[in-house]
Length: 359
Image (cartoon, rainbow, N blue to C red; front, top):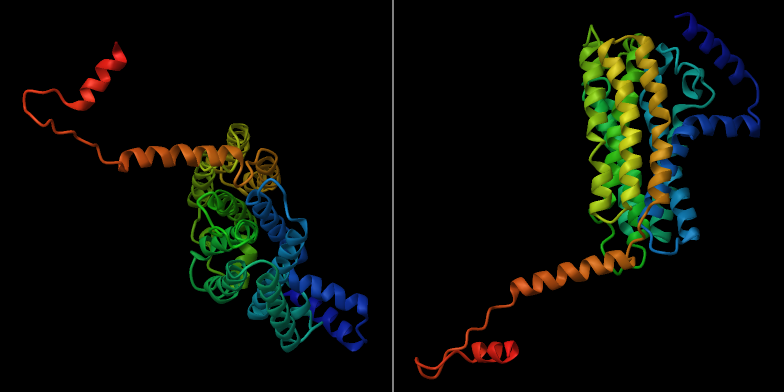
């Protein structure tokens, strides 16, 4: 209550004066959740590079990053418009622009609309329809499903993790489907997307346990509020860490990265899983904080190592593997030719040729 009153007083003071350009920039950065949107852009950029061939189209990567940031800004702003009353009750969010009254809900909605149109439009114009559609779908998934679900069901966390898995797909689609000569999304695109999905759950479960009193004040339905001991929360975190283990092997299988990435992926996942195991063994704010901090390190290293050991799409290895698979399938499809002898007492012509070869 004290934090909310202080926030309201600060907002009244800010509203009384004229807002400067610098203050507007700060307000829009807060509505966009600029740091979170930057992480979204980083994952989309990683997907773009991973889905590129020998040469990376840096100009297209720039446009993809711009469009992704705009889409993320739109989704984050709509989230804050919907949750303004909840944000006023939470210590972690009460100083955002809308609870403070530094911008009206109408103004925030106009900014979200503009950012969404610019983001999806620029992705459509500079990449392809698939990338633009993924951007629009993710805005809807985050603002239209995940955000209201937070006040209804604990499953909101899993839906939110799906939202985080989409940007790598956007990046891959922008790169791999840029020329229109192949599918925008292939099985390899799912490796980084799955990594983002499974990484987010331990990260946010640990955060939700640390801030569970704040979430209770905000009126959100979280697993941590239904888990008195913390065992269920920690088990979910540990389980999703384990789900990360096979992804390195899948990256190698689908020619996304070399064998070296498999070992790096396993090492990073093991570190995170050990932190989750500590949380599971002794659920507490302190052990949850250990997992939260440990989860911050593997993701950038994971994406960086994937790009370092990546196999360019359409590389010699991919083509050779495709030719081998193609020749094998052709052999399987080719019907066996059976030569019938003109007379039953004469040998089959094929057998004669084989005997000549042996001689």
